[in-house]
Length: 79
Image (cartoon, rainbow, N blue to C red):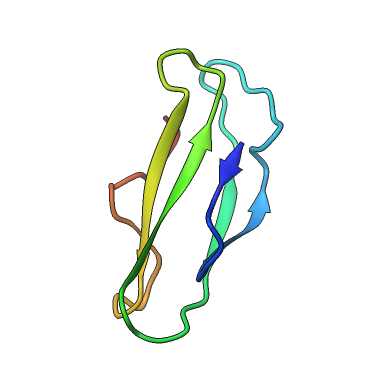
């Protein structure tokens, strides 16, 4: 399940919420950034699972003067 507070970041495609994934399986989602200005903005995207060792992982999204969407924690793949 994905959870993102309202604001300049929005989940536009979600192939993960409600999906049952086996070990090593992946899912994908898309986050769109529509800033009201060029000021830097950040939000936390919560990714929840039923893995007892990692129930929730929060990914930091940042944008603004970066002129691009950035996963500030370096997240670029399955976890």
